[in-house]
Length: 281
Image (tube, rainbow, N blue to C red; front, side, top):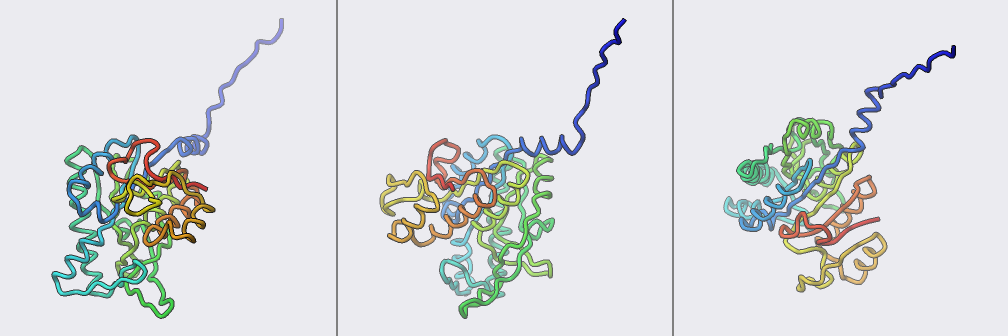
C-alpha cells in the first residue's frame, strides 16, 4: 500500500503579513493654502471634499494671510523675502498662536462637525516633525524658520490606525525647546515622502485656482500635466512663475521620494478624477 500524501499548511510569518499590509495601505494627504482657509465658504467646500475622500487621510494647512493681518493689528511688521516670512521672536509668537491655535482648532472643530475624528497637531506634538533653524544664506537671516530634518511617520500611522485624522499646522520644532515657522507645502511634501515608505501616497495641493494655469487670468487655461522637462521649459518662458515654482518643486521632490501621485487643484474639484494639474516624473 502506498503511503498517504501528507499536506501541510505554512502560515505567513508576522514580518510577511505586516509587509503585505503596508503594500496594500493607501493614504491621501491634502494641503490647503491660506487663501482657501481665509474664505469660510471655500473652506467649507474643501472640508466637504476632504471628508468624501475614502480611506486614510491627513490634512496640512497654511494660514499666512491671517497671520499677517493679526500681526498688523498688534503692530508687528510682516517681512517677506522670496515668498518666505522673516520670523523674529514677535512674529514667532503670532504664527504659533494663529497656525497652531486659531486656524488649526477651527479646522478640527469643523471636521468634528462632519463626523471626522480629527486631531490638530504641530510638529512638536508627539515629536512628529523635527527641524533645524534655517542658516543665514545670502546675507538673509530668516529667524525662527525651520527646514525639516525628519517626519515620524510611525506615530502618524499609529494615530490613523486608531481612527484619528491628523490635521497638521505649519509649525515644527528643533528638539531644543524652540518652535519653528515652516512652509506648509514643504511639510506636506516631506510628510508624504516619509509615509510613502510604508504606503501608497497621493498628495493633493489644494489652493484657490483650478490647477496650474497657462494664463494667470484665465481659469480655463489649466495645464493638465507637468513633468520635470515641461516644468523647466515653462519656468524659462515665464508660463510658470512666482509662488507656483516652489509648489511644483515640492511636488517633484515628493515624487522622487516615492509618492505615487501629486495633483494641484481647487476645493471644488477635490476628489474628482482628472481635475486639476497632474505632476509626474
